Length: 267
Image 1 (tube, rainbow, N blue to C red):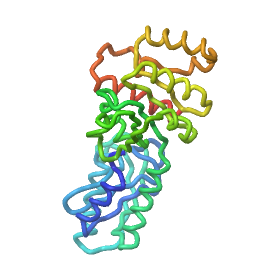
Image 2: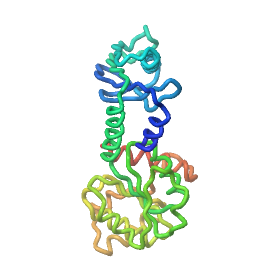
Image 3: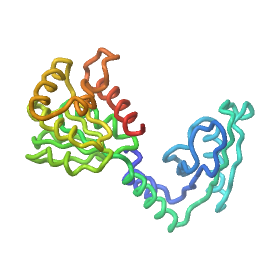
Image 4: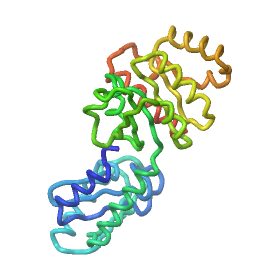
């Protein structure tokens, strides 16, 4: 995820003075949920509590605390016409300047939150693999790219884990329950092997394979002849990203597939 612990650590190191803004209570229709938080320094922000006038007011109050050397503040804001927002709910914010101990606790909290995100494993570091990794990086998921070719693992975002292996199917077997598997290698035979392994796991959140209707039909024939069954085959998503948008550029496929994967993980 883009707002990773490494990014947070960099922000804190560059900001000796910060205020923590946290949603203590959210009633009705609100931009973010209870527990959402952001950090505010005199020059920058990290994270968001939803944007709009609510956030502008929170940022101003946070910078006021920093400027006046105050430890705590709070806001209780109805989201109505008075502030130019029409959500209709009400948000209570805690705003405080954290000491060094709490700054460390913020890092630990972010690390624990990131570790709890579901995993997405991309098999293949080609054009679509790179585009999909980039599309998934800002989302609340952990991305792992598995490849058999060393050169294909270059130039991925820092928050993306990569693994070079001669046996990519082991990554399927070792993955935690609820993982999303996306198969887009350079080799159709390897694709078929990995999809079969993923479909054998009844706890996968998503199994997708890049391809066409013809590739889907070819895989189905091979799969059923090699011990697969119709029920498990029906769980396969291919082509990934659906066919609502007829644009095969990697970035477009990645955008559509990322939405599809996130929907599956959160359903």
